[in-house]
Amino acid sequence: MGDDQLDLDLVKRAQAGDNSAFDLLVRKYQHRIGAVVYRFVPDHAESQDVTQEAFIRAYRALGNFRGDSQFHTWLYRIAVNTAKNHLVTMKRRPPTADIAVEDAEHHAGGGRLHDHDTPEHNLLREEMEQTVNETVAALPEELRQAITLREVDGRSYEEIALLMQCPIGTVRSRIFRAREAIDRQLRPLVDNQRVRP
Image 1 (spheres, one colour):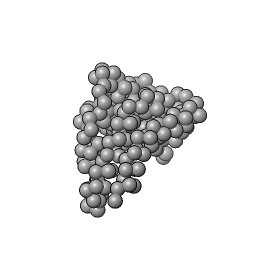
Image 2: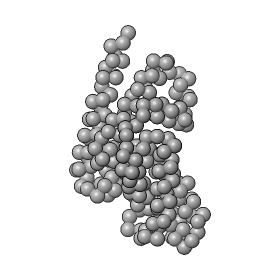
Image 3: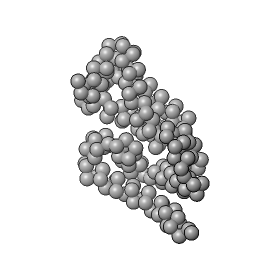
Image 4: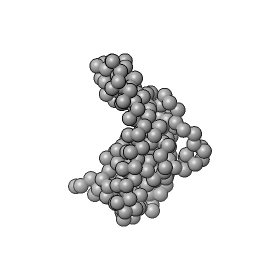
């Protein structure tokens, strides 16, 4: 049975009142949905709350899911909209500087990187990670959404076009512009590193 068919079967069971089927869907997608939300809400605790809210909304709207699109596509739309609504409600300030570092330290495998890196290397990586997060957070809405779906979630251009309801050429253009903006911000950090003794 394919992944999409398995999702559909779980959705049907959940629609019929089987809560354990929906729990399985939550477990399957919570990390991926969490990663998408985190790009909009780059605070660990806050993004977890928004992710939970997205799943609550999905659960409430489950009766409306007809299988016209894949379940994960439908779920991503809900997550993105939930994150956007949260930012509007909070009249969002820019992300604070230390979030990326904290998140990197909590991230699985982060410890192994720390063992081999010099303090300077660690600092540069943290600066770069922070710069990327801040640049992405400051991008216009459609660029941020496109680059997040592509880089965080590994979506194909076709899937992103479907999610964002726009032509594939527009998706390519948005991702290109987002990458350019990130490169522009990272270049001074990389150049400084090269001139250091």
